[in-house]
Image: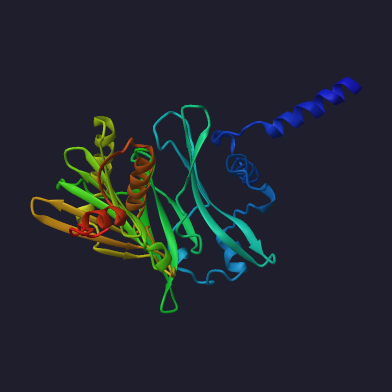
Length: 325
């Protein structure tokens, strides 16, 4: 009897440690355990509020714009076409004084080749906004995000249709019909202290990648040649994002003191500039910024030019006149 009881306790103890799979998530409790396992967050602080819960806490109006669309707390789909289900879930990580939900999240857990899941936090620029999920077409493997904002005191819903591309979720756009000779990326900050050190990144149509570092008036230029598979991946993402069809300016709602991402695209004499205040004009732009920053850290850069204040002083230093010490 004691042995049987011991085995039973051992079984349930190990069951609680077992990594859940999306296919096993049959109720909200299991979903919260799964989120906790994948993110490391306390399961007791994970909430899956319904529209009724949000209305009860007066975080959305009783007659909300959300009432006009069918939204979900979670959906499952095989986005990367590997035969396993992935999970998109809208949840909250904290509550203020047990009265208000705070820190909204929309996360996608995508199955990977190791048997685990890659965690894609697609709400990282919208934590202050309420977002809900709308199930898309299973055949096309996309979903829609409805995000709430306020314009002049009125509730407004904005929508993003997202699909999985090269490991990221980006906005669905028409196929691009315009290439590029160069794409330059840089950021600017509202803070004076951050304006003395910055970098420009430029990818050229021949696969050359250039980095210009500016630091207190000093300038260093680095360069490298991208491998074909890396350049193809980057240029395909640029095409999928369809830069030529995007707005010239984006501003994230209700966010202040954020910096701006800038893109300058050149092709056959045509120039397009995109100014993205808040660094997240849309999900495709966000994925492009992430890829450029990742490449900037991983590549083997070669210093091709250096122009420092020290060098300028040496170059401009006048020669001594005859008889001078």
